[in-house]
Amino acid sequence: MSSTPSTSSFPERMELSGEGLVLRDWTEADLAAMPELFDHPDIAYWTPIVSPFDAAAARARLARDRQLRADGTTILLAITVDGGAPLGEVMLRRDTESTELGYAIGPAHRGQGLAARAVRVMAAYAFEQLGARQVILELEAENAPSVAVATKAGFTLLDRPLIEGEEKGRPYALQTWGLNRP
Image (cartoon, rainbow, N blue to C red; front, side):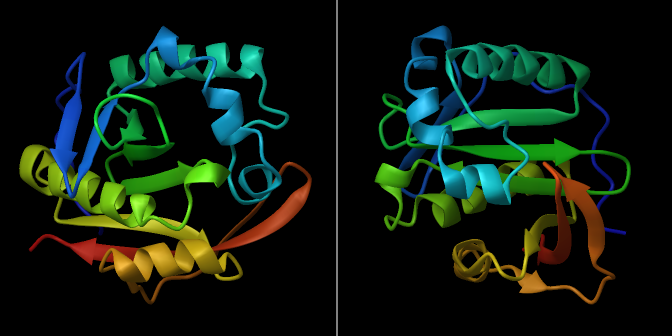
């Protein structure tokens, strides 16, 4: 049992700060920047984000983001250093069984520790505001950059069965990494 998340809905607007980052809502002003961040072979391969990722995909993602937040299941926030230009995205998804985090960093912004810092800020939100006892990351072992993010953010590999499936025509096997409430 990972956590028992609160069943209350998410705030309509969100901004989280910490670790030199501002995590903020996606807006219509970000639509032009989203393809540059998400239309990349690495993101297409390792994430469920649609590929190719074009202007129509950006509009669909923004609409889906707002619907998932309204449903109280998922938050998608733009990763920024100052509340301005988005450099990537961090996700929090919760259900009755777990609180899961995810992330994607635009190719031009990698190597700056953005993902690990964003994950730590979002984990703090999950612990402090949602009452989560543990947050998880589900990663493929072969995705070395994401495994490095998990380790850098303080997560440890949990002794759980692999989550196997198929997405975009390719099989995957996800390991579960966990971070417990401090």
